[in-house]
Length: 299
Image (cartoon, rainbow, N blue to C red; front, side, top):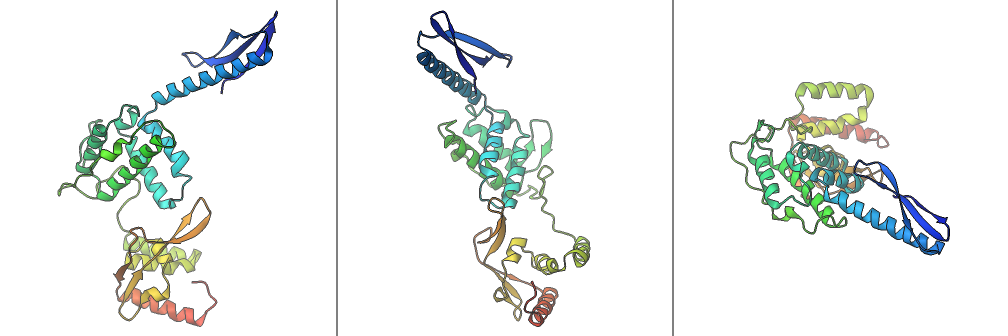
């Protein structure tokens, strides 16, 4: 924000304020006002407002797609109601996008054609601008990239009013080629490989010493292939020990903004049936038996 003041020289008042020169240094500019101090102060406020507006427009004219993603993540993504996992997923997508030259394009100049070419490269793979050759990303990752850019450009249209329309509305997510490796991703931090049995055993041994109540949820997640939020949403009414299946109806997530756990639908918002084998059946039967012995215990 520009700072200014008024002063009187002879019969006339003058107003002055600091502005940035082309080198970014602050220099003081002074202009003649009137013989009235209040009128000169009004001229000062108008001049500073005009200067700030022009500087804002100049700054916005140079805003890049990468700058927009940073702005959106700080003002919308991190302060919203999405789960911590989704926020981290989107932040990971932003890091990948910012490695591509499309992030350096000025926001006012980026077109649907630029974005379509970017998504085609992500989907089918090929040679990147830095000369590296990569295979395509999986469908889930592509949808994450799409969600990030859709919401960021929508944010740029409103409430920011940086552009007049969202070019992402014209993007078509094409079907991935059959020979694309769905798990080829050396940029994304969140891996897709399941935990090994050796790592699972080490984890259980650690929990036996540090946090025994956490063992059962980990066992269910491991043997049934569930998300941990889905495991935390289970009740005994959702577990059929005789026919050995789980009914997944809900999920629990931590809301960082509200600092509390939220019970809601599963990620796909669908109820599903998950079968389990004899190993998990034995674990659950034993847990149920122990719980009935200690009804006041935490499970």
